[in-house]
Structure formats: C-alpha cells, structure tokens
Image (cartoon, helix red, strand yellow):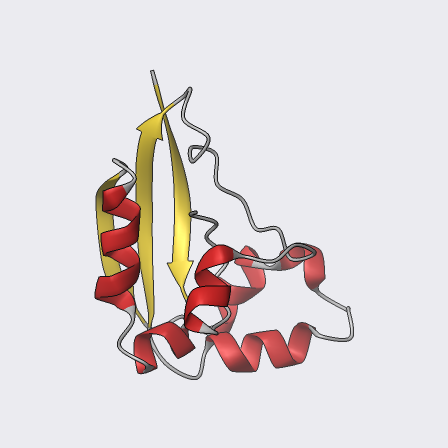
Length: 110
C-alpha cells in the first residue's frame, strides 16, 4: 500500500527558483511525484482550499500571498510505512524545507 498527499510549493518558492531543489529532496527520500502542475490559484480555489481559515485575521493576507504568483501543485506518493508519507502542514513546528530555503513551504522532509 502507499499514501498520497498534496504538496503546494508556494509563490515564494517558485519566484526564488527552488522548485527543482525541493523536488530533488523529495525524490532523494524515495518518494514519487505522481502529478505536478504549475497553476495560478484564483480566489475561489483558495477559498475552498483554506475554508477552515475564512474569517481569521490572517486569511486575507494568506489569499493575497497565495494568489500573487503561480504555485507548483504536486501529488507525492510513498509507502505507508515511511515516516514521509501522510505529510501534513505543521504550522506550529519548524519545517525543514522552509528552514533550508527560508520560504513558506509546508513540506517536512529531513
């Protein structure tokens, strides 16, 4: 069995040309990129994706940031028993990719 998860490389990662470096780190952990697309997210898509944050103080800034440029949307797949499957946003913890590249990416790969 394997797990799949959505990974968004946010506009700052795309602007800084970090996509290749981040994908290389994902693949180095023997995870598969099974789908990848460069997309400009509109406010309707962002409203659906971040619906749990609507009405919070940071929501407008989040939508502005996420719609300022293209994102890379990826589906990542890995075995169920790997610690890297089921990757999630851990906004309260330091994120390794974010730390390495000083950007707002939410993928945790060590």
